[in-house]
Length: 127
Image (tube, rainbow, N blue to C red; front, side, top):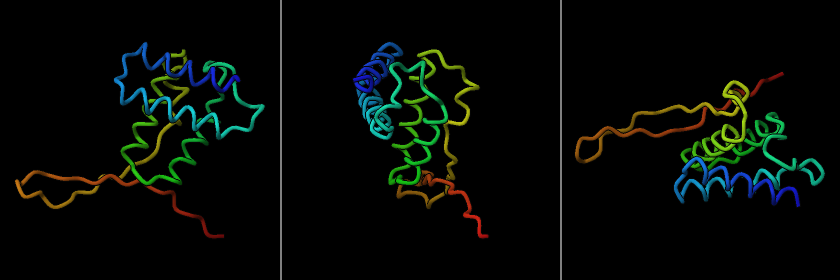
């Protein structure tokens, strides 16, 4: 039950800070996914009780499964905005990020610059 309350609280925060309908739907979906990623008894009752390290691990797992960098960046933005609105400080949320590499593509037919974003994967250590 607390998980349902957590998603509701995140949705309420998204509405309070003025996210548009698209961003509110991403907020709801990402917080639902976060809730489902937690073992049953570890889901906090409210946003203020969330352990930021749990969110950091959740983002890392989302990055591993990432098929669309832009959506992942929007999810992280929604998570950060929601946590900021619920009272977390900026510094506490510094670890909630991914590294992105922007690659220059050929100009389109109209001569406009184009870029592609890819995640910077950490180099696997060989021991």
